[in-house]
Every structure is written in structure tokens, then in C-alpha cells.
Image (tube, rainbow, N blue to C red; front, top):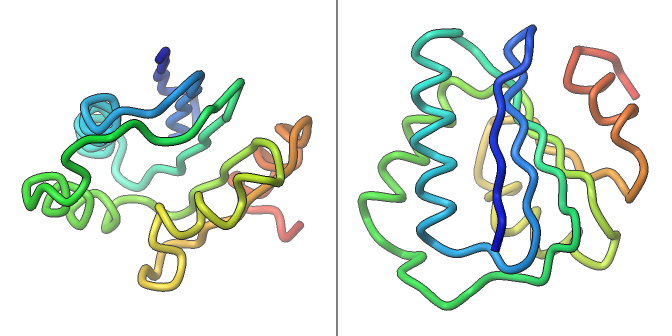
Amino acid sequence: MATTRAMEPGGLFVVRIQGQLTDEDSLRNLFAATTEAQYQGKISVLIVLDGFEGWAEGHWDDPEVQRIDTELRQSVERVAVVGPVVWKDQWLLFLGYADTPTEIRYFGDGEDGMARAWLGGSQI
């Protein structure tokens, strides 16, 4: 599985995921986003699914991961996921759409521009 992360101007943390997402990669993403949030203040997160194949088996219920995720949510204004519509429900569930005050929205393949505009504050 390949995951790349980058901080872009304007407080936008971009994660590109290919293949299966592992719990280790997820934890690395959380640590990197938390570090950026400490420097940037509030951030927005763009997750791009590029050949995403689902979640690998792992320790997804690790209390340390849950603690870090809870802390990070206080620093994240919006999360946008761009990818095939077939993954929409699973990603919204994975991100805790129903249980978080963070605004989360799913965009279909090729809607990167719309996702970036929404993350920038537009009401799309």
C-alpha cells in the first residue's frame, strides 16, 4: 500500500491512498496531521483515493489510535474524501461522520477541484 502525505498552503493536509489502507499507515497519517495542526492551528484534510482497495486487517480499535484521532478532530475544520462512489458509505463510517462535529464530505472521482473549493470555505 502506498500512502503519501503533504501539507499545502492554507492549512490543507493532503493524503493520497493507493491499495489497502493499513492500521500502521493510518496511524502515521494521524501523527503527521497532528504535527501539522500543532504548527498550523486549524487544518483541513483532503483524502484522495487513487486505486484504493479497502482496509487491511489490523488493530483498528487500538485505544492509542482512538485517543490521537479524538485530539486531532479538535484541530480539523473539514475533511473531504475524493474517490469512487462505491467507497462513500464505508469512508463516512470510518471517519465517524455521525459522531463528530467536524464537517465531512465525500466527492466522486475527478471532483478534486470541488473538494478543494469546499475545503477552502465555499458552500458547494
